[in-house]
Length: 385
Image (cartoon, rainbow, N blue to C red; front, side, top):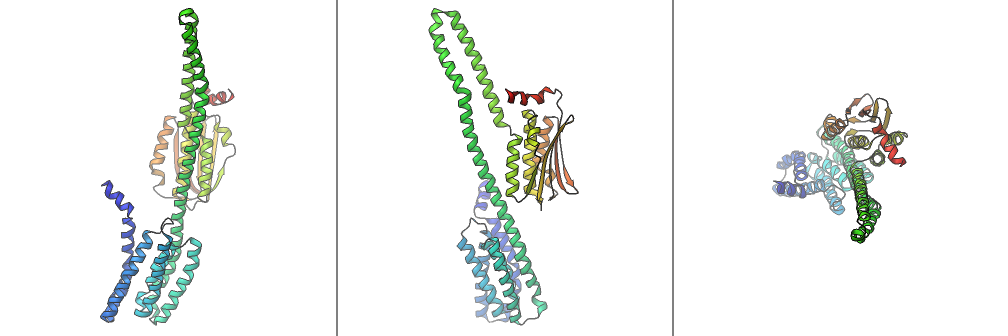
């Protein structure tokens, strides 16, 4: 089954079939072929096959990674046949301009597609007048072409923006992985280099003293045990830090992600200061909440222009708020991401609130004050050390 799914994705079976279904608009033209000679009908059907193949190919290869010459060629074929068929066979073929408008969207970038859509719609009006058919017979296709040209440009450009955003996130993730590898190498050298060198030296001393001075050898072995325990603790602390995200990192990531998506981030300038008062585990829970909330804003907040991120703290605890002015889809609050956040916050005795507001959609992650206040003071003490 998996092989069949992979094969369908590779050959874009879904796009092909979806495009073929769209060709139902050519039925009125095909129905009118009985008014023409057999030779004309055969030539017309052949042209329709070529037209349909060009349209389906254009729709299935509409992304920017496809061959641009192929996409432009498909548009040229559909546009030429859309001009010829109504003039030669009647106004029932004016629907071909709708498909030419869709191919135009996939063939060019947005600005050039807009410049091409205008003349294409104007050409349809001219051809419609030249056919001499009553206006009531073809006006729906005139309106459909204009609507298809406009909405398809917006839809395709939105899809391309999502692709660019996803590629940017993948590139950022790869850069972050490379940077973490370098930092991991530096930290391991700093953590273990001195300790291992000292252990090697004390091992040599203990080896020399094992027969001549057993008491001194025992002291060296005891010191080696202390050095080993300290190095092990430092390694564990370092590994724990790698597994936990921080608010500072996620704020920087959120700023880049929102800006790339065309959403203006409004981040509380005091967020970083308040984050330093949190214990690592509690900060990691809020960092995960920030990451998932920003991801939901980009994916589900339709029409969002701004996103406010703030962190408040007091005797009652800390609350991270992410508020956007877009309209969330009905399924957005119930996704697996928010469910996972609720579980993370529950481990820290916190809770999550997510829902629409009069001005958009808001996510709140609240962590109450810990039972032992010294838990929140640990990061500051460690930093000072």
